[in-house]
Image (cartoon, rainbow, N blue to C red; front, side, top):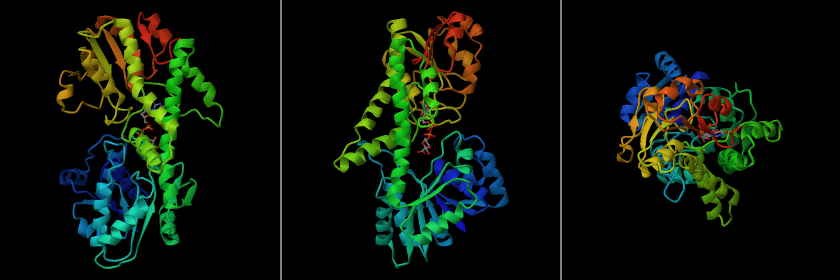
Amino acid sequence: MNILVIGTGYVGSTTAMVFAELGWKVTGLDTDKHKIQQLEQGVLHFYEPGLEDMLRKHVQSGQIQFTTNKDKAIRDNDLIFICVGTPSRADGSADMRYVKQVAEDIGQKMNGYKLVVTKSTVPVGTQEQITAWIAAAQEQAYPFDVASNPEFLREGKAVADALNPDRIIIGSNSKRAAHVLQSLYQSAKCPVVITTPRTAELIKYASNAFLATKISFVNELARLCDVLDVNVKEVSFGMGLDPRIGPSFLQAGIGYGGSCFPKDVSALILTAKQNSTELSVLEKVVQVNQTQHAYLINKVRERLGSLANQKIAVLGLAFKPDTDDIREAPALRVIESLLNEQAHVTLYDPVASLPADAAYKAVTECSKLEEALQAADAVILCTEWPIFKNIDWGHMKLVMSQPNVFDGRNILDPRDMRANGYYYQGIGHNG
Ligand code: UGA
């Protein structure tokens, strides 16, 4: 089977590489010439552990190739994965213009049977819409199927997740299409669920929304833990031992970010509204998430008083470790609040950097951690990069102006920090 992956962003690049790794011939298509040139040279345009090595290996062996020539790519491949972006519009709905464009291209250029599959997270009903878009664009009535096969990989762990998935969801109204997709994943050792396209599309949104719910639940609980003098990490641990609850996604902190949870939760809430129903639990999930960074800033204010002219070091910018992705990163909200209050902000992240945006020009980005902490009145830890767990706080006390640490990811030990002479505040993690 020759596979075409349209869109070489995060999901597309990883999908293409994984299919190449599984032994299929893959073509990656994108309209961005620069991106395609880089990929052809084995250079990945984002940071993802292990993925660039895979890219080089498969480019060299010829297992994978990249192109901007959509006509030829569509003609030469019968199995087409749509991996283009579905960004959020102002009202929270998914912007489908790139998916529509791809569907129309496929309709116009197809020269025989095509199986078109969505990997991107797309609203329920998209399979039907893509079918209509392709049919409307067709110059000749070639047969085709459209199926849904959502992606569940996490940034930072994309290679492991994509090679060892927990489940494969195939949404298809056609037995033939479902069979082709099943054979594509024949080496996978996980359950394969074959269902309707609508169900597959909703499974993806519901999964992300439920994980976001777990996080907001524990984040709000952490606020109660602060008042009750209970450690939320111990509560999460105890809860997580119940197999019905499970330990994952119960780490309290300054909230979830990234390109998926905020966008997908909003889109699902909107889908409910558009269908005259509501997902009120999810509305609260968003509200808790949007106020979680402010909860931590408030602790800083309680300690320092006015933040004007205080020097605050922000550690970590990426929305989570092992990625350079800063989309919807809680650290951005923290930095914006600090700047609004006229604080002097220094920033250190081992991989990610701020966008060239006037809004952040007052921030001093440092290439060394110690530089960021120089003369700081407080540190706010926003991303749990492993190196932040091993900071020599004894030494840093000599570097900082005041020993105040606000741990937005609960990765430091409150007792150790206090024994080192620090004023320490985590989120529901203080004793
Ligand atoms: C998420 C899902 O986990 C993937 O299954 C899904 O495929 C992906 O979205 C997607 O839809 O493409 P991702 O956004 O890469 O993956 O990152 P996660 O590891 O899920 O983390 C999301 C956010 O939640 C991060 O900001 C992280 O810091 C936060 N988080 C996570 C917590 O605050 N606490 C936790 O216990 C876990």
